[in-house]
Structure formats: C-alpha cells, structure tokens
Image 1 (cartoon, protein in one colour):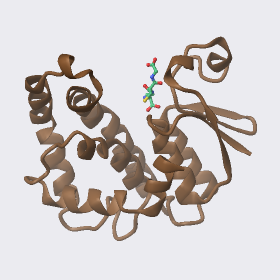
Image 2 (cartoon, rainbow, N blue to C red):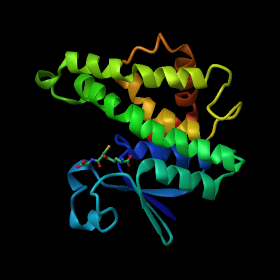
Image 3 (cartoon, rainbow, N blue to C red):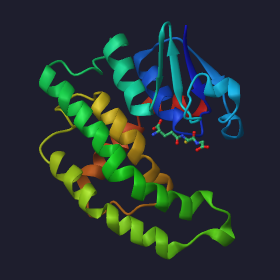
Image 4 (cartoon, rainbow, N blue to C red):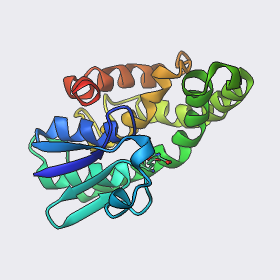
Length: 200
Ligand SMILES: N[C@@H](CCC(=O)N[C@@H](CS)C(=O)NCC(=O)O)C(=O)O
C-alpha cells in the first residue's frame, strides 16, 4: 500500500488531497514536526521534511513532485492532463506555485496565524501580501476565460496551485482584486477531497 509520511496540518495535506481525489488506498504514517529530523525518518527523506511518499520501490519527497507522480500513475478521475502540452503546463504551474507564491504567502501565514501573538508582525504580513500581488494578477489573467487552469476540468495543475494558495484563506489574504482567483480557489477547496485530506 502507498505510504504517506507526515501529519494533516502540514504540507502533507497537499498530497493527502491528491490521494483522496484519486481514491488511492494509503496509510498515513504519522511524522509530527519534531520527529522530522529523526534518523528513522531521515532514512525515508534525508531532507528531514514532510511529506514523503513510499510506493513500492519509489520513494519521493517534495509535495508537488509526489502529486504529479500520483496523478500520472493512479489517474482515474481525470486529474492527469491528457496531452504532453497540458502535462507540461501542470509542471509549469506547480513550479510557479512553489517559487512565485509560496515564499511570500508563508510570511503572511506565519505572521497572521502561526507565530506566537507577541512575535507576529502585521507590517511584515502586509508587505509580503503586497509582494504576492503580481503573481495573483498572473493567475487571475490565466483564469479569465476558463474555469480551471487547463480548461473546463479540474486537474492536478489546479490541485497543486490551490493547495499552496489555500494558505491565502487561512492567512486572510484579500482576493477582492482578483475575482477569478477567488472564484477558482473557492471551487477547488470546496471539493470533498480537500476537506477529507485535512480532517481524515
Ligand atoms: N518543499 C517541500 C517543503 C516541505 C516542508 O518544509 N515541510 C515542513 C512541514 S509543512 C517541514 O517538514 N518542516 C520541518 C522542518 O523544517 O524542520 C514540500 O513542498 O514538500
């Protein structure tokens, strides 16, 4: 059986979302944050970060790579893009989410949600939110004439970008200026598999 290492309240939720969408039976091997640096876990992911996936002979780290692999291997719900070009677009959007969105969004999230109250800095959150503006505008443009990133159907491209951008909801990022992003993100996180991934 597929084994996913991590905990639900972490980036492992991204890959749990993919597993739930695909209907793949899996075991969630609990690796809370303090255990990510243990020798046992480093034998699975030498980076000491969650998630990691073990599927038979394959061991993978990096949530986006895990999800692209799962969609291609286990697709039955239409999550995997049907053409080489769309597959490349899914990779493009996944890299984009990690490089153009995640770093600034993490700063917002830390300063609005995760740091202890007395360490939060709303100015830092606002500055990071502002830095996100151009990337959100790009996404808004891409969604102007289509329901999902690759067309009318929800695919792994949407899952990967929305799993990063879902932090914007927790971090109370203002999406009023990007209504297409707001509409698309609401549809993505409204999928039952998103809730199942987070709640079990
Ligand atoms: N780029 C990696 C990042 C993984 C990551 O940083 N995970 C966090 C939990 S959300 C972690 O393992 N942190 C433990 C640590 O940094 O010590 C991915 O997307 O899988």
